[in-house]
Every structure is written in structure tokens, then in C-alpha cells.
Image (tube, rainbow over all chains, first blue to last red; front, side, top):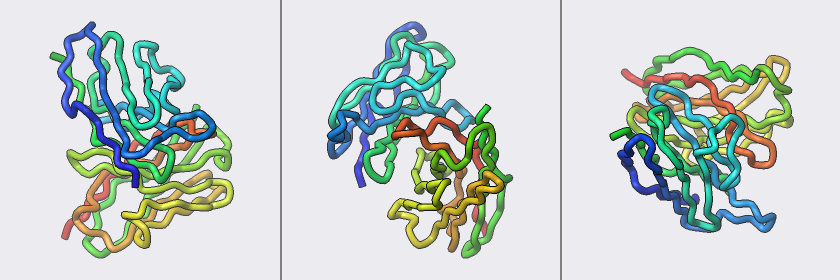
Length: 111
Length: 119
């Protein structure tokens, strides 16, 4: 299985400030079609997860443009340009190249 | 609107089996795969596998191979996850999620079903 490693695991952020989460895989998620098979999900407290970013950098429908995904190969980043209170929760990356695997999760909290 | 509605909470004894349903609405059921993901209390997300809703083909995580079975009833737009030989470590919330076209992420999720394994 592909192993996904996120950092940091805990991320306290002041509202209005930017935030960044790293996700690394132990093998490349880039296929020959040029797409990176990496998704980002947010699970708000007490809720089901929901999709933020797919194929590395594509924002899902309805996701605010303050969220962006970047990276290629085995090194990816989720950035929030200006954190809002509603962004608290646990963020997960998931590789979709092979049988899926999730990262450990990064808990974002408001300072 | 797209909805995935799961069956209610279950309490099972060790060694028993559990079957969770996931009823889809708001789209053509056969067009999208259904994935299953679980989350033990206080832990992260764990992908279990998926089923092709059109032809019933399945892929399971190695961890659950031989113990989990995914099925679907296209006439009822419903997918099922059955987990057997339950142990206490199987206590978790089980989610179904709709796969996207061409790996476009798991765009819709059910509300989750809590399965508690306890003697």
C-alpha cells in the first residue's frame, strides 16, 4: 500500500492568517496522463468528511477559492489563504492512484 | 440533490456479522462507484474498498480481504457492506461515499453508521 504522511498533525491558526498542510507519499502519484491522484478532504467536528480538492489541484464544487491544492509526484500542499472560524476540523489527504489510503489527518484549530 | 442515506446504528457481539446499507438518490445509481470508509473512535479515516455500481465489480483493501463483502441492488439504488467475524476493534463509524467520474474524488458521503462490537 502507498503510505501517506501529513504534517503538521496539529495546526493552530489565527483567523485571517494563512495555513498550509503538507502531504507526502512514499511513491509518485503522477500518472502518465499528467494527473496527480491526490485528494483533500475536510471533516468538520461531528460531521461526515467532504471533498475539497481532487486530482491534486482541482477545487470541488462549492469549495471557497481560499482553498487551493498544489504539488506533484509525491509532495503536495493544501493552502488556505485566510483561515475562517468555519474551517476548523481535520484535514485528510488521500491517494487515488492505487487502492486508496488516507493520511493521518491534520487538526486545524483556531487560536 | 444527491443524497446517500445509511442504515441505523448497530450493536453486535464479537464473532457476529453486520450489514450496513447505503441508499442513493438524486442521480443515476449505476453511473458512479460506491466506496466504503470507516473511522474508529478518535481515529482517522480508513478506506475499505469500493464497488462498481453498474457491474458489481469490487476491490477491497488488503486489510479487510476475506472478511468484507460489498453488494448492490440496482433496482433499489442501494449499496451494502457486510463485515463478518467482528472484533472489538471493528467498532467504528462506517461511511459510504460516491466516487467521482475519472477519479474526481469522493464527492458525496452518507451520514455514517455507528457499529459497536461488544460482548
